[in-house]
Each structure stands twice: as structure tokens, then as C-alpha cells.
Image 1 (spheres, rainbow, N blue to C red):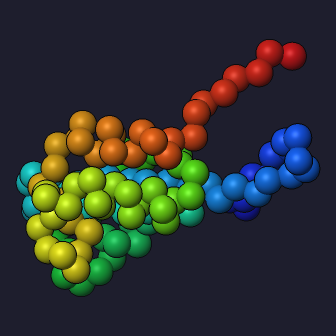
Image 2: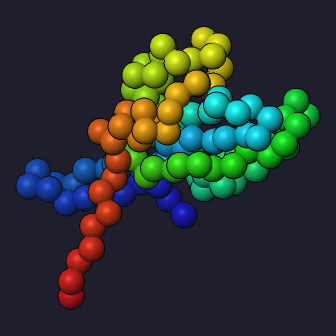
Length: 116
């Protein structure tokens, strides 16, 4: 499965990078959330992170938003929530879920339905 979407526009075709921003929670870290990005399934990423020996209980996906330019979106969300960051070298934040959702909104891929 590819995460590149090709759209036709008036000037030809545009390739767009698609991925996910996620907010993970862990019962052993109440009120602290891991906020990051992946181009794969967010549940698979949570499972991968949960296998680390330093993690006492599994991470749970609390929110996952499909976004354009996931690396750029992640950087934007981290900058918006910098004042909530637990450690400057880690992706953990003491942020409310609504803060994450608002910061991610600018990059969210809209759900579009087409009638045939």
C-alpha cells in the first residue's frame, strides 16, 4: 500500500504525501501523551512502541488523524504544543486531547464522499 496520492490539477499532476498524526496514551503515564507521526497504521506503530523494554504497559491510540505531509504536520503540532512538552528530546506532552486535535486540524485530510 502506498501513502502517496496523485491528484490531477490544472497544471498536470501533484503528488501528496499522506500519513497519520497520532496521540498515544499509556496507563502508567496518566496525563502524558506521545504525539508523533507515521506513514503506516497507527495501531501498528503503537504496538511497535509498546514492545520496548522500558515501557511497562502498552500504548493505546487515543486519536489518529490522516494528514497531508505528516513530517511537516508533526513539526507543526510539536511547535504548537512546545509549552506542554515534558522533555525537549522526546515526543511526550502534558496536553489536552483538544489541544492536539486543534493543532492537527490544519493538516487533516478531509473525508470526502462521492455520489455515483
